[in-house]
Length: 144
Image (cartoon, rainbow, N blue to C red; front, side):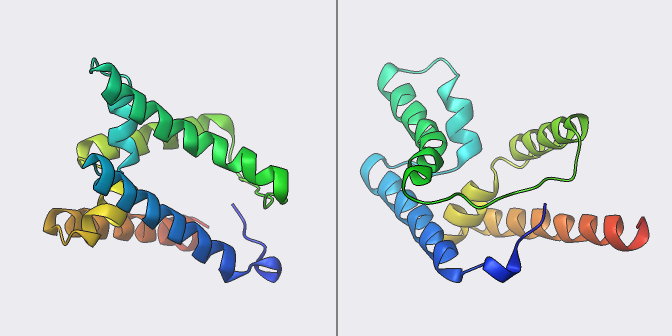
């Protein structure tokens, strides 16, 4: 994936971060739930009361619909991923396994857990960030 640094503006990133924080605050304040995407998605497909399933499906639908609505008023940034489908599928499965094994994902631990001063979330976030840094280093500098 490449980033067009010549057209990058920090305002869209700041706006996106503010919207993520606002959604996490609203979900915690209104429903008493943590905005961890892997947990929300997994819970949407487990046997649960209808009201519990409804808010989870609405949250996931919002993740899908938001870029479509944005594209009605502005152009979405171009993205290019330098990987084939088998690699993307394998990567997705590894991320899913890691999120379940780590009892949460980047949104649950990194955004919501650290803001609640959770030591478990701090350790989890440091673990997956350092693993990501190490992977990029090995892939780009050692394996070329």
